[in-house]
Image (cartoon, rainbow, N blue to C red; front, side, top):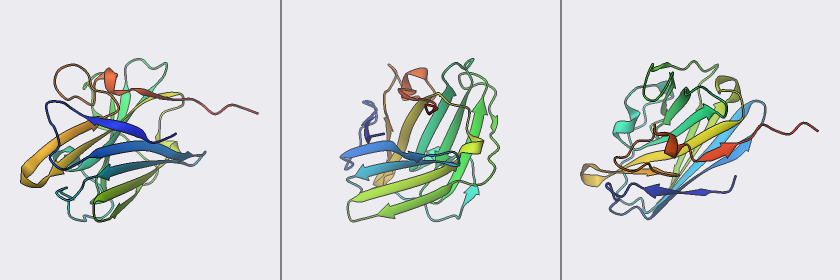
Length: 181
């Protein structure tokens, strides 16, 4: 997948952040690997290193998110949150913001933040055994906090009205099942 531009929600513009992109870098039978790239990060708030552990509430600061729904699903979906602190979370929902429960993963995701002068590259590897069956509708997004508590909400697409990554409009990309030879 080529890098897809994320758009900031119009009601929550960034201060210094110029752009954000997200993409699937690789996928095989064992891992799904993703990359987010943020440019204009001089004022970006990076949560302190916490170690690789499951943690709720990551969206309250800089956090990268993926939402997956089975293409032929009945309205349920999975949410994954990843912070540059290396904390992560995974949830299942029965329907729109309904029936939230922790999603089990066979092992923890591998999170690798790399920061340059004005850029943050954030790579994530998630065990495929912990993901729903393909094909997927997918939403890639980010909450980016800048100095002074300013938060911007970036997504492949936004629904009308308030920022809401759970909304079906945000599940704007498709990932197909691999073709059998």
